[in-house]
Image 1 (cartoon, rainbow, N blue to C red):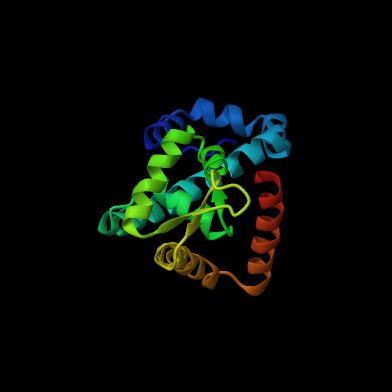
Image 2: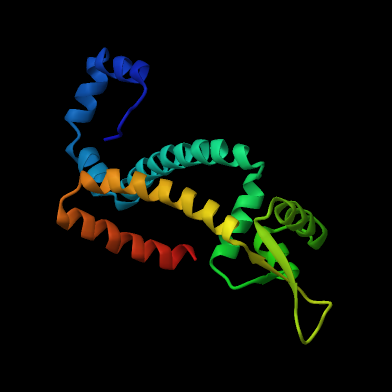
Length: 180
């Protein structure tokens, strides 16, 4: 039994008694649908994808407003997110993490440095090695955006009982191991 979100299709099915009777009179087909784990997983994954897209859209809209104030692009913000979790990253590390050329990574860092979100340091053992470190101003921006996500999650979790919250966190833990 498929979930139909298209009102036109629902009406076509409802207005077709023959189709309804074919489905109702075919218990094998109903049981196959109910017992088909692939269809169930796909349906549930589709619902989860909708949820992720909705929450991501909300986050990106808020992020866009915040970043426009500070003249920071999405790519620059994502770089700040990486840097917030490290002592420093080399230009090579940045280019790999961002999927950019070293020249493009240099451009991202130049702009962030001018805005005061990062600083460049040189390795004491090799002055050619440039290390990029996030500044307090950069950390503050990442933390503000992270707090927005936390607030959205608090609203979601407030609607769950203690067992559901535990199940959500346990499931997230399993998913995060696969996604890394």
